[in-house]
Amino acid sequence: MIKRRKNIISFLLLFSMLVCCFTGSAQQKTAVPHINILFAISDDQSYPHASAYGQKIFQTPVFDSIAANGILFTNAFVAAPQCSPSRAAILTGRHIWQLEEAGTHASLFPDKFPVFTDALERSGYFIGYTGKPWDPGNFQAGGWKRNPVGPEYNARKLRSTPTTGISKTDYVANFQDFLSAKPDAQPFFFWFGAQEPHRNYEEGSGAAAGLSPDSIEVPSFLPDQGLVRNDMLDYALEIRWFDTQLGKMLQLLKERGELANTVVVVTSDNGMPFPYAKANLQEYGIHVPLAVCGPVVTGKHRRIDDLISLTDLAPTFLDIAQVDHFKGITGKTLLPLFSGSRSGLVDPSRSFVLAGRERHSHARPDNLGYPARAIRTARYLLIENFKTDRWPLGDPAPLDPKPVTDKTDMKPILEGYEDIDDSPTKSFIIRNRKLYPDLFQLGFAKREQVELYDISKDPDCMHDLSNDSALKKVRDSLKKRLEQELTIQGDPRMNGRGDLFDSYPRFGLMRPFDGFKERGKYNPAYQKK
Image 1 (cartoon, rainbow, N blue to C red):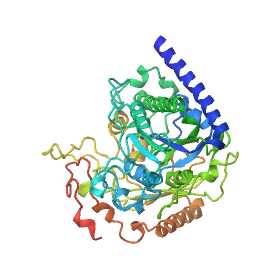
Image 2 (image 1 turned 90 degrees about the vertical axis):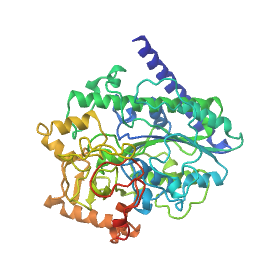
Image 3 (image 1 turned 60 degrees about the vertical axis):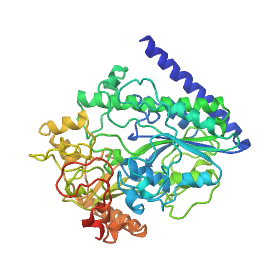
């Protein structure tokens, strides 16, 4: 109890310190000689899982202080509900259907696509990263000599971690090494890619740290059951760890006199690793937290409801550094939103965002993916599924699974539905599908070609309204707008060449499904289609 009280006091002191230092940065912003950028991105965190959004079990005082001293965005969306495609979209400012192999998970990243990190470096910025950069995938196979994010600072490791699920990478010490290597006169861009709250978690770690299962708001698409609540507590604990490390980084900047000159951007790469969230285009898969503060942001306690795509970050970072945009950027700079003092809806032109997915893991015979696209407006979410004969989250486990013969390249097929991260929650729903048939159907079963959700009434996407005759005009209008935008942006799914996505190599571990399963190879059956 004493140790827990000391931790709480430390959090409060850190929060107080950050409020003071960010207040100072707002006062000094007209005198800064250059602007640094610290980009902090968690791994698998859904909106609204930060205490600034009202869910206090997610203890994020540092994120909250950034929001309080700048802008809290309520409608930020990733380009894909998967790690590497989402990160590729952030780096390039393009959507995944514009990125060839990089639009599919754990593939390669063609070096013909420019990234904002390189542009910043060429303009004089000192760049680097710690933790998770663009990943998983094989950047060397795409022609890169280093990760597209930049130079790596991952040498420092923690001697111990609070739980077995937390990465041993010492993010803060690595950031300190980066700052020590940076020439004094150079501005910096640093990518803090936390491994948390990506699975696996140490079961029971959240409860052991004092988090109460009674305080968790279980989304409607998951069983409100003790095991699920405790699984979400473990997830919440890892979000707290991410937040704590970010706070220590800001303290380093304050000690070096750099904090007043630094824009801080905090978000996540996709939604939480639970069924009907990550790897899904539903709300909990693509809607993520976002907070920004620093010398280019005016006002405090601003809460902006405009629809934001994380493809908007690349042009925003370039504008902060006063670097020209490279060709091919689809995103729209956020800099106009940073100025002024308005909250609520600021830019009427931001009427929708787009998202999509292709293959996630090796979850189907022939290494096939699940292609889908989505358009999200202020009220509605429409999803178009292009291959409705496929299981959206991977095939069920076969009755007679094939043995794994090469354990270096193959993973066994355990419960099936391999696009969903293995977890106590996933196992519980599968094993209790008769007790929760509606939730099992929602998260695991095959889907209609078009899905429509009224987010204003149904933020958990429980009720597909695509067959509601009263909403036929809404459905048809959104589907038409989605396909128009995809066509303009050259999506292969719109011009009859979409099967190319199923040809792209996967560099992650494979499973003993039937058909093509060669790691790191193109599937020739789909290359010419």
